[in-house]
Amino acid sequence: MGDLQESLRLHHIGCLTENMEESLNTYVDILGFKKTSDIVAIADQQVKVCFLETAPGVFLELVEPQGENIALRKILKSKNPYYHTGYLVKDLPGMVSRLQEAGFYLVNRFISEAFDNKECAFLYTREMHLIELIES
Amino acid sequence: MQDLIKQLNEIFIDVLDNNAISLTETTTATDIAEWDSLSHIQLVVAIEKHFHIRFTASEIQSWKNIGDMCRSIDTKLKAK
Image 1: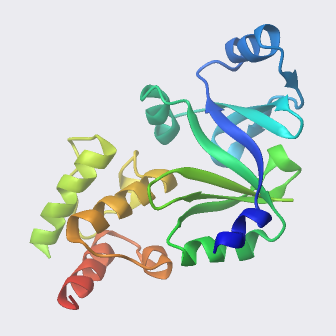
Image 2 (image 1 turned 120 degrees about the vertical axis):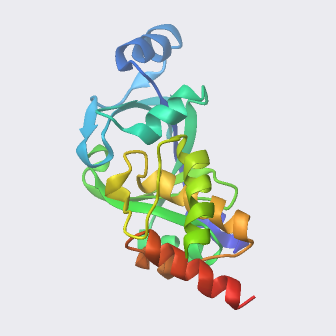
């Protein structure tokens, strides 16, 4: 299982925000990160997201919950906004299976408008850290 | 079954932070606003810790309601 690292490439850290515009002001206008996407609505996930490049190939994903989205609003309320890490993988179904065999819990698989309609999956590690896989 | 539901009810109240939850065999995720895909896994892990058991991915996916969940727990406990 130790060889999985070669199949995972860190792409982003997910950061929850109550107000996308305020966070864009913080990270783009003040910290100088480069906005590399439009603000994209992902209906299936009840969120709006925007990607900022913090270093070559490493992004911050600002995530603003939409509608009720009780789960993300609960995390936001806990004052722990950096709530998931996203990794590019070449074989998403294969990686999901391998991680499930290793004891990870599959939360869901979905098509993401934020990644040109590529397949993504959220999984919890055994200690309940949330990771996202994105088919590269 | 009723004792298991009672124990599950306490876990659900704790994980979902909703004191109004009152589970029955036929309760499903659509009956509880806080029970979504993220919190579902949090519930599974809390149940595993409480009963000292471990579910497979296919078992978790097979549950349609609280009754299914209880039968799965009961089977695990009897096999211990």
